[in-house]
Amino acid sequence: MGNTSTSSYILDDFQNKHTIIKKEFNIYQNQSFIYFKPKKKFNSKDIEIFITKISDNKKDIIYILNANISLENPNYMKNSYFKYYKGSHIYEVNESCNDYKISIKMNLKMEIFLIVIKLDSKNLHKIS
Image 1 (cartoon, rainbow, N blue to C red):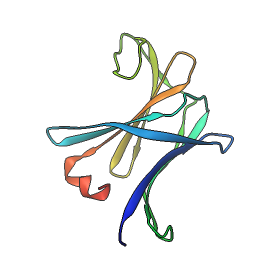
Image 2 (image 1 turned 135 degrees about the horizontal axis):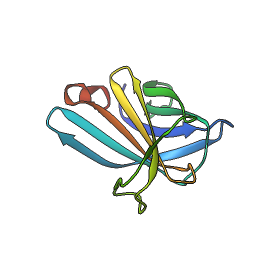
Image 3 (image 1 turned 60 degrees about the vertical axis):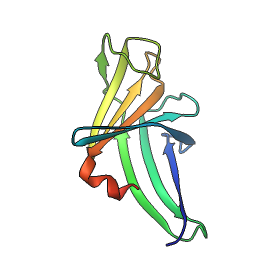
Image 4 (image 1 turned 120 degrees about the vertical axis):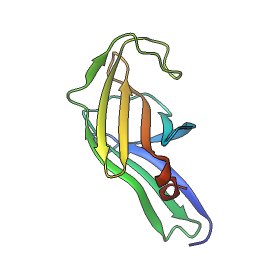
C-alpha cells in the first residue's frame, strides 16, 4: 500500500465532522490505551467514530475503527481526575466494539472532551 497517514474524526448527530487528535499512548501490562481529544468540545446525542489509514494516493482507505455510539444514557462519575480536564465530576459512556473498548468522557455541559480507546496489546499491529 505504500506510505500511509492516519485520519481520526467523529461525526455528530448532524453529520458535522469533528477532528480528534491523539494526545497520548500508554501500555499497562497487557492493555494499551490511546487518548484522543477533540479540537473543540461539542455536544451530541449520537456519534460515529472513524479512525482510518489513508494511502498517499488517497485511493486505499482502511477503516481501523468505525463505531456508532449513543450518548443518551451516560454514567455520572464523581471525584474523577483526568489529565485533560480540570473538573472532578464527569459523564462517561462505555462501548465495546470488536477488539476495542471505547470510553467517551463528557463534562457537566455534556461536551465531549476525551475519547479513550482500550485494546489488548497483542492487537496493536491492527492500528500501527
